[in-house]
Image 1 (cartoon, rainbow, N blue to C red):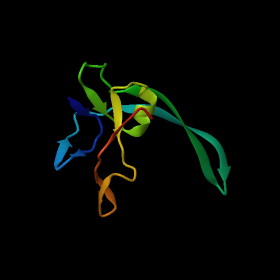
Image 2 (image 1 turned 45 degrees about the vertical axis):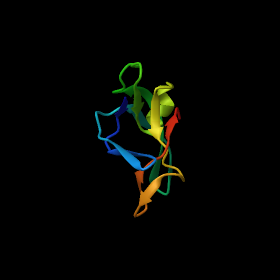
Image 3 (image 1 turned 180 degrees about the vertical axis):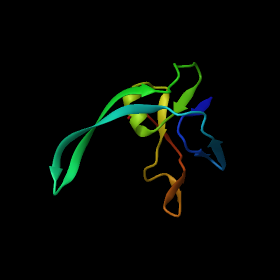
Image 4 (image 1 turned 120 degrees about the vertical axis):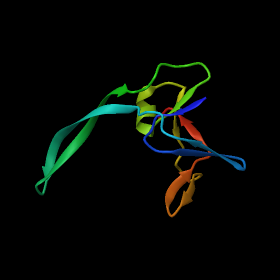
Length: 105
């Protein structure tokens, strides 16, 4: 089973088929913006990431599709993100479907 925990429809190209995964919830990483300086009156901030929320416990036979930032912080092999790099199918410049899912960050 593949569970989509992003706010977007995920399409995965498998041969001649397209697997569509509607959102089934949202996993995210909590964050805080920390001001580290200023340039020409514009604040410069750094994002400090902390805990992953909205990610279920591992379930045998299930992988969870999340954003790349969540996958990087989850540090679990059952947590993946869409591979939106050069192999992705694009329409009007936007990712329409992916061929691969990336494990980790």
